[in-house]
Image (cartoon, rainbow, N blue to C red; front, side):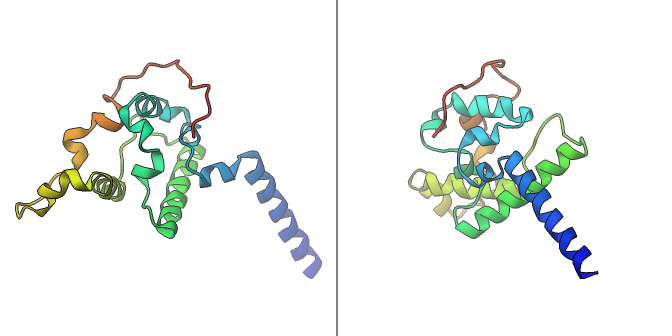
Length: 158
């Protein structure tokens, strides 16, 4: 019984290790935007960002994940889980939209980066009832639905 359990655990570890190696799992732990573009459904979003003014200032994680270490990787793990299950079960939406939690993270990061610019707006006692991207939606990714595909970025992003 112990031998069978040990063999089963070893086989599971080997399968997981091979799976992690084949999928280049460690790339998803970094900040390289081209990793986010590994999935074809992200092509238009990546292209929009690549040709936007935000490219020189921010990568995907700067806007879409918290900046504290542990919350960042918790969000990355949760997002990764949702992405993998969507692909495995072929439940990929035609239009990808941020979940409410993601919208809050993006909003916090907009304010963090543009704190000086928005300080007057934030300090006013009127309700701050909209997200920054409600009005500035095209800034980071360009207009929705527009893609210049089949353009492919051949250079390595930093």
